[in-house]
Image (tube, rainbow, N blue to C red; front, side, top):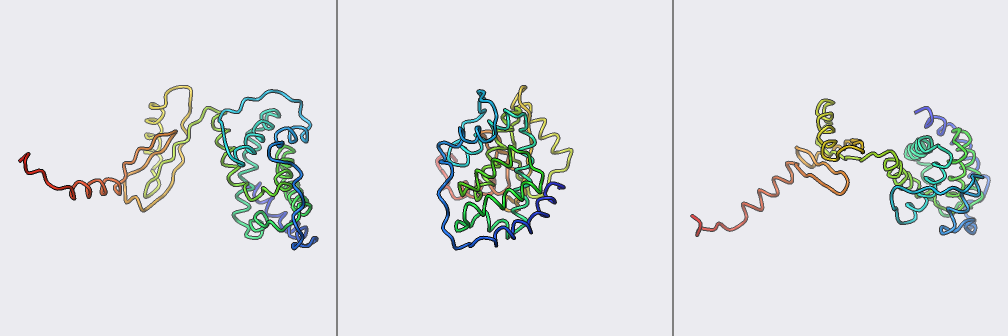
Length: 243
């Protein structure tokens, strides 16, 4: 992605910022408490308060941060842009061991984290919403949670768009025509008003067949599961009384 490329191009600046401070210094006090995040973040972005309904109830630290970011993104009509920027950042972290270590290192002072993330976000031309959000994460020592926050934010954006994710696990990738047929079948099950979004996963351990997960439902039609069921059946003692 072009965005991911811009992020990678700013990593030398990030490394320089890291070296400008002692990595052995203690972490500074948290600038924002998690319980105050939503209110303070809204103030930081300068947006007028308006009531935004979160489409899903998310729990835990990552869920709370994702929900607060979603509210800010809706207020500025930038949900899609913010989601893309988060995913690009996560991809850049995965591709750079140095960047990944930085996000996990508790010994990096808050001032250094903020300076580095501001340079990276600025170089990648992130929106102010995303930039401000990353600064809050850096101040709170929560950059290590960016992957899970991005996933929770994705859950919210899908619900916002009326989409339902279907995770299809197979041994090899489904051909386009089979994926289309499966998507149409799932769409019939879910009904109108929602749109199915298929995500394919490859797992050779299922041996064959497929496993479909969507919503709270799991349809396991893998050869691995069928083999286990057959094994249990064969191990059951024969009921000679029925012969």
